[in-house]
Image 1 (tube, protein in one colour):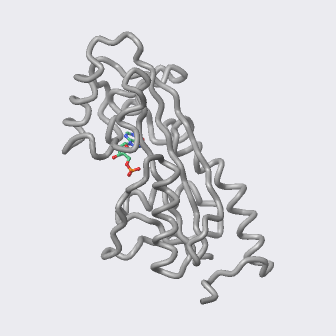
Image 2 (image 1 turned 90 degrees about the vertical axis):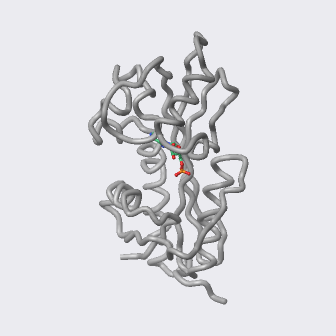
Length: 204
Ligand code: IMP
């Protein structure tokens, strides 16, 4: 197994990512608790790359980071990279979004997830993106999931994220699609590491 340090201190997120990578030779590990990285980027890609690169350099290991959020068309893409900072709790964030959208007829939105992997010297080796198009409902529906799940409706499934089983959500979600796009690149990287074409450790 090859170690991959994940830029999160959330064991739940780590378990979800390990499930996406279950048929690979990569073993995920939480980043050191004391290592805090501020998300200063203006895009999901900038933030994912920044976090992967900083964790790789600090630990001297291969590192993985993701950044995700919700973009609402009628709000010019907000909350976007500020999705987590849009309020102090999930219900607060949902209430603010519904208030700002008001009676707007265009409810189109998308969830975005970018995943990046950095080599031990901090260079980005792999990037993948996943998108999930949907609509913002006028009121929450469903008890599952987290974050904005109860107000995010996916027409393809005729369900909100909060009404889906974890497997259904995985099959349509931005995160599921980003990890699906990452997998072939990861096995290519694993092949190069096994062949000695790229190093497991930072040479410095
Ligand atoms: P991150 O942990 O910096 O990627 O924060 C992403 C934020 O976007 C989370 O705190 C949620 O508010 C929101 N978010 C991302 N993915 C989802 C999802 O699948 N469902 C609901 N909310 C999500």
